[in-house]
Length: 281
Image (tube, rainbow, N blue to C red; front, side):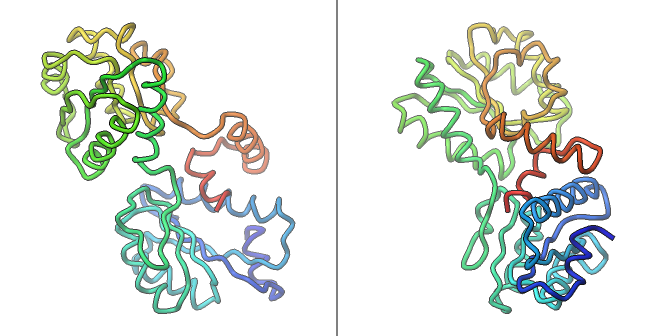
């Protein structure tokens, strides 16, 4: 039994936090890290009056049942869930109980009365990218985006951001988010130039597939600055030559390092980036 579970069962708590995270299925590792980060925050605060109850949004009964179980245990606030679809399910259940929800999704469309979104939203990331690029004299900003709600949210933020910083929205090229090959999109982007900076708010395997194509299609990353997103907070990307010297928005490095070290000391493993959201919440 975790420290937070012992606190929850002790009977002395005057406030109860319900944490809704995936504890089974493909995202179980993330859910466990979120739970451990939340427990760490309670432990470090020394607060003996707040209980933490954790429920699995991937259990057979789903996120709605997880929320209801937390409410039945007296939760005064719900933190999570992680995914937008789950947040849409949880919102009405919490609203009926007059309990606020702070979801960890970055999809601001789920926000509403009593349901808040906590995270570094795409619009904030684009604002930071464009503002810094423009301050460095890079005024023509192109983008390579997934043809998905996330990609279109980035595109919607790019226009206002470039206008605000007296920059120019250059061409935007979309690719199938389910694709495994991106040559056509990169080639078309290169042919439509010129631009000073290229925004690629992608991560993981897709970014590693896209990056080598840039030089192949004559997008010179020694002259054209690459701009990323918080998805680039991935140590595995450091070995990709095309990304060396690129810029992307991220939380303060010293603050993250301190949290990461304490998390590792407590749990024996490095935390995923999203773990800090649960800690802060």
